Image (cartoon, rainbow, N blue to C red; front, top):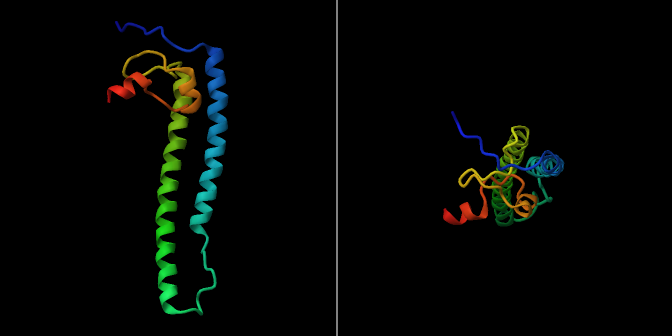
Length: 126
């Protein structure tokens, strides 16, 4: 029989975290849409009729910006996924419990990094 870990946040605390995380998801999804629309837009600044050297330089920077936008989008999608996983942990009432030490993660840390699964103590051990 497994020993139940009793260290957990109260239902009231979990509700507060749930609201915070839902707000962050909405903002993160909005930011992702901005990143994707920037990625999709053709940033043609009217350089078609200028010198070929400038055009090549412009295309190079466009590729760079598409790569960085793509990396940003991937990072943002992971952030949203991590936040959604945090909501699942709230439903399971395991939210805010360090997956290494089994102790509660500091409330201030969770307010800043609501998808955290490690306490500072566990993070420092890594």
